[in-house]
Length: 242
Image (cartoon, rainbow, N blue to C red; front, side, top):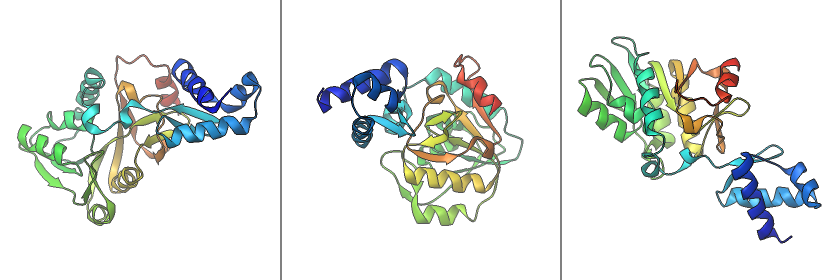
C-alpha cells in the first residue's frame, strides 16, 4: 500500500473510530509501526490530525479560525454561557478569555462587574451589552484567534488579579486535559489562570473529547468545567470523576 493510500486509510479510521492506534493499524496492514507513525506525523504536520502517544486523534473543529467557529454548536454554547454567567458574583472582577462562548457570555453580563479580557471582540460585546467596566489586556493580536498574546500581554497580565477566569479551550479530554491549537494562546491562558482565584472551563459540546496540539492546564488545576446539560457525551461523567 502506498503512503498516500495509507494516509487516506488512517483518515477514514479517524472519522469512523475517533482515534488511531498505530500498533493496531500496523498489525492490520502487515507493515511496520514506524511507517504508520511516520504517516501520522506527516498528517499532523498538514493539520489533518493531532498526534498523541501511541497514535492520533482527529483535529478538533474548535481549532478552526474564529470566524469559522461562530456557527459551530451555537445552542450548546448559549447554554454553557448562561450557566457560566450564573456563577458570577455581584461586584466581582472576572476575566473573559477569547472565544465564541465567552463572546456569548459578554452579551449576558450584569452591570456591576469589572471585565478583563485579551479579546477585542469580547471587550466590545461587553461594552455594548452592559454597563460593566471593561479593561483590555494589551499585546500582539493573533490573526487566527483574534486574541492578544506575546511579551506585552504577559507583562500586562502579571499586574492583574481577578476573582474568576472563564477560559476557552479547543479540547477537553479526561486523559489529555485541556488543550488548544496555538502555542501563544496556551501560554496566555496559563498566565491568566495564575492571576485568578478560580478558573472555570467553558465546555460546549464540540470540545468534549477533543484534543488539540498544545496543553493548557491539567484538570486538577481548574475549579470546574461548565458543560451543556443537554450534552449526552459519556466522557462528561469521566471528566466529573477526574
